[in-house]
Image (cartoon, rainbow, N blue to C red; front, top):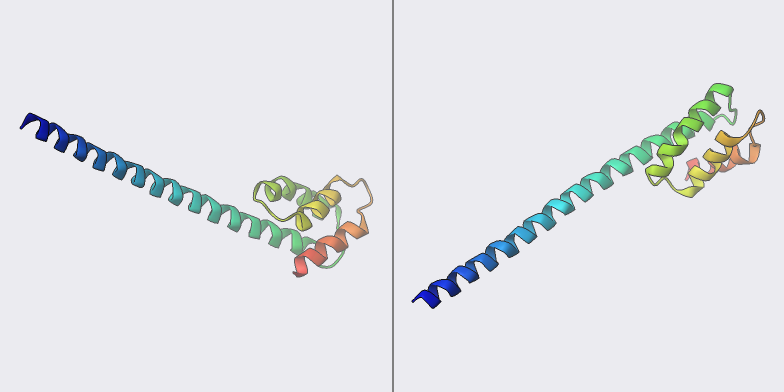
Length: 111
């Protein structure tokens, strides 16, 4: 009888433990899905802002400063290189903004 009870208790414990693992996996998936959705939304917003600043092809000093502020966020949010590369080139440029970087960013925004 004691062996049966021990075996039953062990079986119950195994079921509970496997259930805990499934609950943990479900919780981790939910967190990862939520983080992915936040990153996607952030990336979309950064792209929208960058694209609106270069839409007319002219980049003022204020535009350049704003674009520079978007670089780190764009890279962290996983924005594609076709956006982040020209964005960083514009931000890192000196007094003269490279026209080819502005054009590359405009082209990427058109997609």
